[in-house]
Image (cartoon, rainbow, N blue to C red):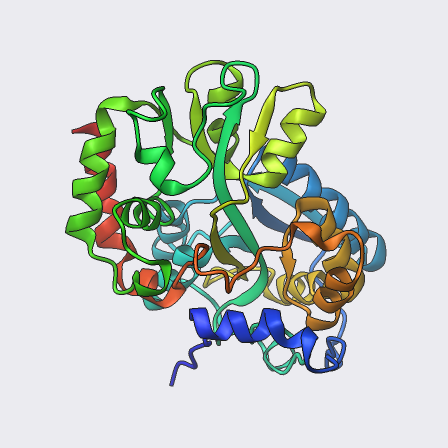
Length: 352
């Protein structure tokens, strides 16, 4: 029987708030034999995210194990499915957002995690049989500070209010997070989002469509669209905006309201380097790696002791308030059941 994780608003609220009331144990791993595999391929999401994966996970992993890691960007689920169904799997670890992880498990695209990983303790979110929660990320609204220094949206309702905030919008090419933002903009309280009213979400999306100048085909494009003056307002992630600002872009990001979603690591069914892939996933959960990764990308770590440490430090100001009533927690299980159909509809809507 497939074991489900508690990927709900209540589960994440409990985990993120735990440090205030209990002393969390560090992540503990059971013993593992060193893998004989000498090279694995791991997917990433391009841009500065690629560089962070390389610096915080890949390079230290190779230094410790001798296993080489090749990074491949933008590992979408259509490619995962094609590899598994054709029995020609070339990726060993997929960096999978919530909808990818849960829908992939439903479609039987992942290898079961081994016992050593399933028994890992001290995590904010426990592993599913087929995928390991790695961190939580936040997505929100961004704008150009020179073109729109004062008049810009800071939440989802503002992003959809084209009269109050006129300008071109850039939208992501994936339905998860986009539908949640549309429904919140239409007046649905974040705690009441699920099950998503898909028809209502698309009705709201239709209102915005005449003002959408670009559908970003990759995460970096969600930021570059504003930098290159292809859009005035967009939706992306703080670490992407921060990296662009470091490189001279005139951007800002709003923490006023965000979508918050778990990201997972999963191993495609038929991986030829399964043992090394398991070893890589385990390595990325080490407290040292989790802390470096979280601070580099402004993420919420999935190791409770690391989360507590960051919350107690001066560096933890970026951590989202998941209980403030405004921020959205993405329901991974709902997307696991509905991703294929809703994404198909969203893809057709983009080109209609």
